[in-house]
Length: 282
Image (cartoon, helix red, strand yellow):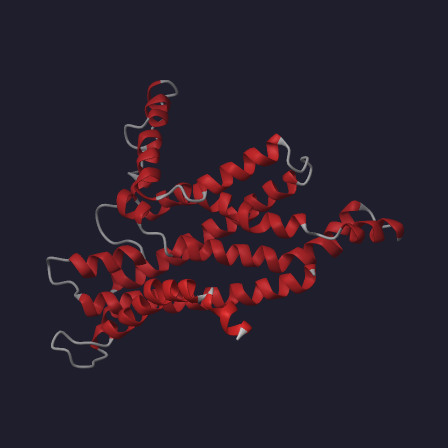
């Protein structure tokens, strides 16, 4: 009875997961195998044979890998710098507050901020053009392409890495450094042979989290890239709202299922790395 009573506290969370995650996922996967007349079919997956669709998934993959790699490295460096700050000090509090806020700052607001700063008529663009006579749009409107999404994505990727990786770095056992020093090892030996191997699972877990965060991002890209569907989430949108017969609900379900498979693989790898990281730091 006591165990049953304790389990009742999980009912709201389980209901939330089922309604907003599990049920939509099931509906998406089911729609991928449904024809317009309601019969079962595999024809919806033919959309992956189209060159534009393959290119959009490739763009999403390299964009996610690149921003995750840069964001995880820079975020880890910020975490390393925070180790020298006093616990509960003003610097630590400011960084924690900024990271928590900026990691959630995305969508249309972030796109608008970059348009006003680095857009064709943005503040920095006009300053470089009028003062330094440098036109950053000489070779095209790069901000409104998948390459232009790198900077906006890094804006929330780096803070997210700080949030996810700093707890592991701050919990690194201090006696390990003392043991290396007693044995005559230098600080570099400690980081190379002890700290980095211990923190590597947590670092890779953060990297996978950043990859998933970038791969599933939609609103910022939708606000910046108004023409075409150059990444996977925009392909799903195109299949849902296309007025030219390019796609339909079944095709959108097939595209979303492809994204879901990638996300499930990344999440499973993240869970395994987090379990290994926890075993190192216990």
